[in-house]
Image 1: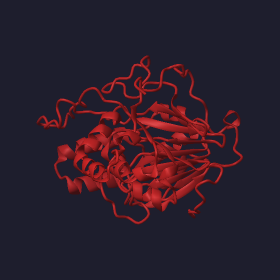
Image 2: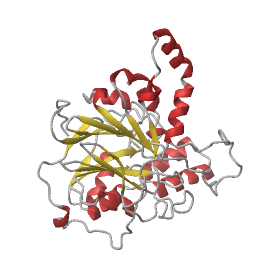
Image 3: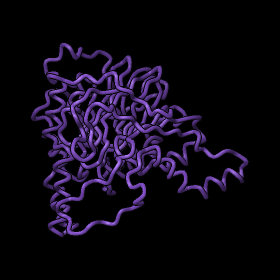
Image 4: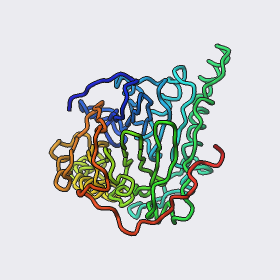
Length: 369
């Protein structure tokens, strides 16, 4: 699609596919090279979701200004969604006064061991092996303590740690969430952030065994953008995306993933364990289209391509079920929220899920905010 740059303070709402490649790997394919990252822009205010490799660079390439960034959101704690966080913390601080960071809390316990394993893997940091976003940000600053302390003392300035307050998203307590056995129980979206331009809500999705894992929805006076995060087919994604203008959804093409894994890994047990994860915790293009259709969304934007080297025809399978506008995103593509949009109540392309539980009164912010 044609990428048209706009002024930072232009009125309206749009999203930028900063990076579209999925997985902890450098793909090196033009147009699908940067790691997964997305910007939502409302009247010039910028909200960033996920921080794959090159995210900070892509923000600059998109013509966005760090001084306009309001908040950062992390869908889950996998490295291909967080690897560029250190760069943003260390390199953007001169441009900003304060940026709040929201993401998953501590998993609470190690993930279950795959049935394919013959031995118990070594546990990294066994005293605290599954930190959430708040503790992760603290550890990142600690890892760069030498640099930060040198500069603060050499310049006579305060280190930038206070500019990046981080908050673990609190999961409603009455929905039956369990990181091993019930990672995405039926629930309603709940608010995690609000300012004068947007309301951001979250919902749990199925990226087992990684938990918590969230999808996020951004609602403004202009419309709505939903970002699925990493997930298999999940009814909660349909709930949070209901009637939205733009749904960014991750996708996987299983056959080339298996071929690549067999070539690179070799060990049949390890290959099967990896494929078990991919089949359970990611979404095929056809299922992404089905989710979008059932949610009645206007535009389906596919991203987080795994593998990023797969042919475009693989991703077009989303159109089998989806009747709206299908966009195969490339790095730095901009997708606008339509100025005039159909009411979700009159949208016949999707249907609401029946018997949705009501947990709309649940608390949403970390208690120490």
